[in-house]
Length: 289
Ligand code: MBD
Ligand code: FE
Image (cartoon, rainbow, N blue to C red; front, side, top):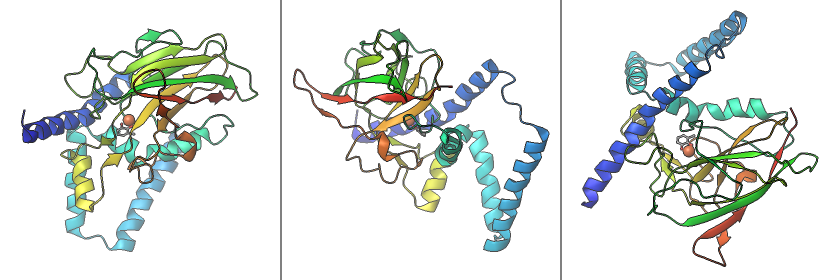
């Protein structure tokens, strides 16, 4: 494959990822039927405020018909291309997460993003995540302990991990990857410990040909998220946290397009003494429900 072919192919894969997030979201909403009800008074209040905010911008910024029509075309494109989940998770979810986790004393969370899939393969506390035999990338041994905010180790904790591969692609969203590649659930030991093997994820670039990419290019922004691991950590009787962990030195830790990096979420990986790759330790503390 030539370099140009490789770039075309990776661009096509990336574009599919944004669109597939719509199907994935709809499937999960159907499974959770009825959970999406919002009271009429809140709909009226929130929709009213959102519409008013947009009108205020039009008046204050003296928005022209040309700009209004460009917005209309773009909004139509976002829907047609299935990029609403991508758009919302990149530019809005971080505020929703901030509100949702305000009360917590335990480990920091951050946004879930568009590429979570429930029911990944289950492993013991010290397994290896599902990956290809020749999975490219630097091996990573990730270990730690799950405790309550009062320090009690949480036997029965679950650590769910999903992340992009060494090229920045997520299984089930980019084509050509095994269904559960780099997705798995680990059951903590009696002392709440876990230690599992995966590979380092690559930084992720928002697909540049889709509607979100068109906005990024039109505005002259960049499309990058720093490399990250996604996790959901839970235990019976404790609040589930959805989080992401990042790697020091990544060029985009300071300007993540999704505004999802927090200083508490940086890992401290070191070269492994006993084999190739890196090792990192991160502990989680959970709030009681
Ligand atoms: C990602 O991998 C991601 O985590 C988010 C929030 C948005 C786009 C791609
Ligand atoms: Fe991600």
